[in-house]
Image (cartoon, rainbow, N blue to C red; front, top):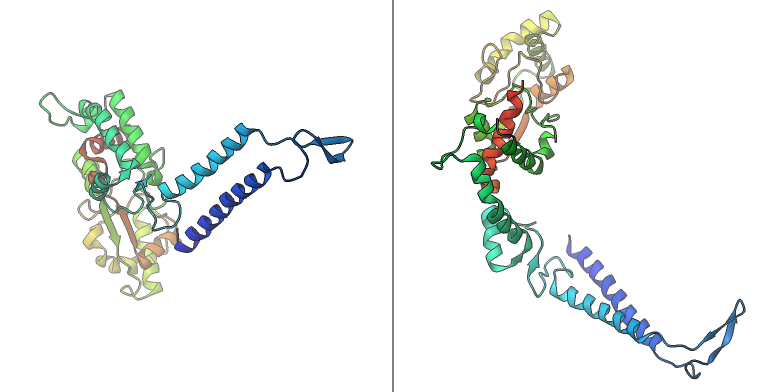
Length: 320
């Protein structure tokens, strides 16, 4: 939040609190000149009001809420974007850039988020370790864990908490985010490859080829050849011209267009398209390129949790 809006909200809050105090003080005084309990000189709808004071318990309770509001405002970060409060308390690590920085901050401030994470690690860390470890302390294979219903339930919950925002709650992905339930893998579907992707992340870059291919017509020709590789009917002359230009693409996708796990280059001969398989989408990919990033989860979750998630993801492709 910007400094302007922080000050705006703070000033309005103070005005309301001070206004309530003034109003409460004014209504607590008997300045009518009429003794308490006596009738007031006005009526409404045939009802005459008596000059009764506010209940003392109600007034005391209201004063307490005003005092609590002022105390809270100074104790916690409520005034400005730069004000941390007298207690230096924070509910989240919204400006922290790494897990290490979060742990370091927890030692010098009252970070509720990190405190809860540390308690959860103590409580559930042993459970995770038991689900994934052999008697000698080594990790069980993903295929072995994938046969354990209890471990898969835990892995699924971790997946929903950390991966579903991109890959979907059903792990079928969406445009730009891979489907994890099929057997089409950019970097390989082996146990090692899946865990490596989650542990260390991936960074896939498809270069923009429009200028290199000679503009719009060159892109159109290569797109025709690529679509032909996947069994689509296209203009034969365009596809033939595109085949010659495809030599530039073969370095990553291979001469046969079947891709490479080493580069994360997709197979162009199937019907699986990460960014859409329409001619318009394919031409846009070739012309402008694509950039995809899978973040590394090793430092965020730790290897034990990553191993459970990897086993869950591996189990999804085993069903095919």
